[in-house]
Length: 202
Image (cartoon, rainbow, N blue to C red):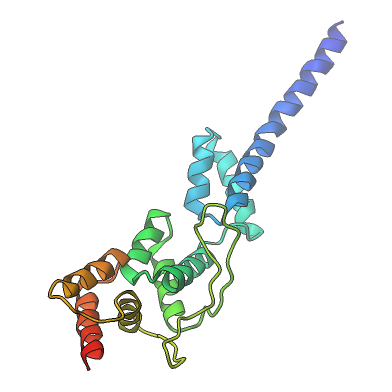
């Protein structure tokens, strides 16, 4: 009876030692399966699951090693998609990435790379929650030229949103408000409103 009990206890101990690792990876993979995540988001999810610190580090380390986590890639794709699909400005993009735990230097690199066209069509990730969408690369204006600057994108957005230009006095305020909500800096938004009005009234 004693030997049988000892064997049972030993088996239980072996399972207990391996279960946390399997559980940690299971939680992480399920979390990543829904959409791309940042390292900070995955770490926070594992912490909510009340895993030990060394367990969390082991899971994060393997995810990084095999490319399941890559904050630089995340920042590039997020920046490209938000610019292309939702016409977000740099300020809003940077703020959203910071909230997701992406380091400042990676954010700056992504903004610069995408602005220069270096990211091209970076590719997108599965997104059950609508975080990323399929992008077609840089936006094009009516003549097919790449919109390479924040100002050009802002003016184009206003042209699409208000094709008739500023008709009433409050239209300029409304246009400025649209750009502010999209995350364009105040100076860029003001310049874009003036350029949009100039083109529309020319």
